[in-house]
Amino acid sequence: MSDHRVLKSLGVAVACLAVGGSAMSVAGYTHSRTDTHTVNLPTGVSALDVTAGPGDVRVRPEAAAGPSAVARLRWAFIKPTVGSTVDGERVSLVDECSFSLFGDCSTSWDLALPQGTPVRVRTTSGDISVDGLDGDLEVDTTSGDVIGGVFSAKRVTVTATSGDVDLRLSTAPESVVVTSTSGSIRLVLPNDGTAYAVQVSTAAGDVTNELVNAPGATHRIVVETTSGDIEVVRG
Image: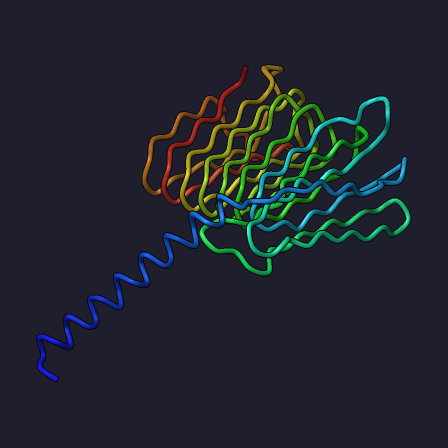
């Protein structure tokens, strides 16, 4: 076979793969299915640990009906799995997409919790939002934004690989540690005169820091990113 015919055959094969992949993508979105899964939480849930695949996670205060955990599943080919473990008043939630093509599988959580509940969330992709709670917060995300509305916590730890972080605390925290590889970070602290030991740095980006470093302070702020702007202000 001549070189010309070999190259032509390869070109046809690549084109077929591209068309086939596009067709599967269109088919997946055309036949996308959804479902809702509810996990019964103990009334006095004392800690929540979430390990999530693709999908958003929202954490908010419980309503009059009590704590709740609702997973909204979306898939085209294979339904994502959802699991839960309840150990006394400690709850662990996990979801997984065993097969995902062109982003056709995700699970989004809506979590309503009592005040004071410490929360740990680990995700591969998707946004994480926290609003109105006062329990300790630990977040680890590979891709997605982390948004903290007006909330309070003694200890906040956020580790993000790719995505912006925007946190607004209503009371002075004991410790806030935010590290990111790529993404901007904005931290708003109450304007109450609290002194902080501060460490703020970015390798590539602008820094706005309204805090005066007090090395001996019992309250600590660490905000670091490799690439992205940093804003630490009082408000």
